[in-house]
Image (cartoon, rainbow, N blue to C red; front, side, top):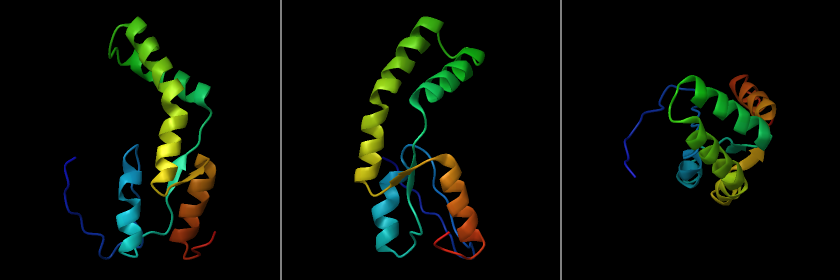
Length: 111
């Protein structure tokens, strides 16, 4: 895994998102930078359909391949969420995460 430094000086908060964001939770906690760590909990079927629609519209691969890949990701999603939680992220719905981040920006760390 590649690493690259970044500077958060002068920023009220920084947000790391994506499937690998949980990888930095422990280090951010150790450095006193962690206000919250969340893994999005979304309805798996909706995620499958959104991903499939996006990939089909972008013609990333043949439809059969996209469906097979989508089903595999659908089945793997619970394990991915468990792994992220094991790395220190809390499972939460998108609306809840947005509310908590808005509270942090407003200066109310506990929403």
